[in-house]
Image (cartoon, rainbow, N blue to C red):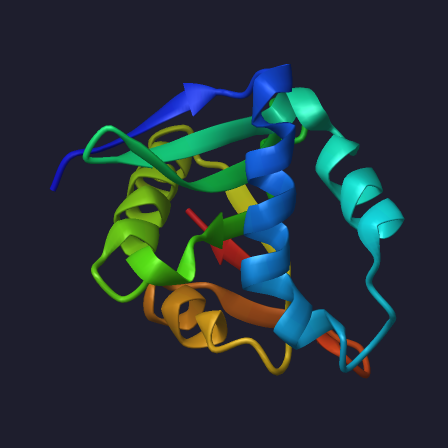
Length: 144
């Protein structure tokens, strides 16, 4: 499977907004009102930490992750794969690579996920554990 990541650029904003609507609205609308302004602010938050997921020469997703090397802790803020490309192993392949990299430097990886998001099973299957929970989300962590 040919999957790669590329740096984000300003021309990707419309792709990222569309991706967010396709992937997150069904989960977040149960919790809060989503609109164009909130979508744009979420896309622009830590914009330079975004990498675009490519599959077969097509942009199919994004991952926004920061790496704090002083604390040896990485955090995935957003991870989205276009529903048209879900279920074929793209997300699992990207996360596997990230987890292997974290193990190689003894880093932990954190993320939060809506409790109604089926990606929870993907994260748990890769070794992420629940470390906290709120009314709507689980905080999860992968320990190297």
